[in-house]
Image (cartoon, rainbow, N blue to C red):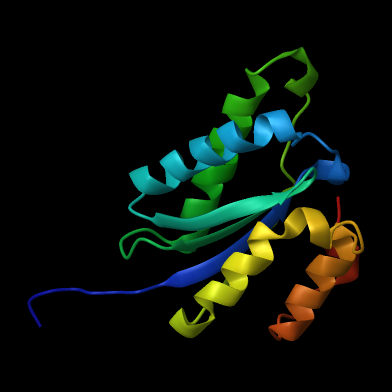
Length: 150
């Protein structure tokens, strides 16, 4: 086959270290735009990005030429360095070490897009920890509670 084709859709979730609430409404749009730029440079396409004060959800198509863990590393490292330059209140910003990554079938894009878009309303009722546990359990991802939170 002379051409390599791929459609690798994923839902990525990661939080701030110790669930600090650094992503205020005035930071969100510029942070998401910056993170989307990193994804584009890695050959990925952002479908939607959102979250809440202490975590981020990304629905995107992944590059076929870069390992998924490398893409997440680039997004987290680049956005963390950039965000720390946005003012004294953000100098202590750090993402937690880990992340969740869930494969997505094309037929589920719209439901996940709505889920990410509605994060503010969702987190009026549900904590990030409960949300993350549910996402891992619903998708059959085994985890050890002792190593999920930092």
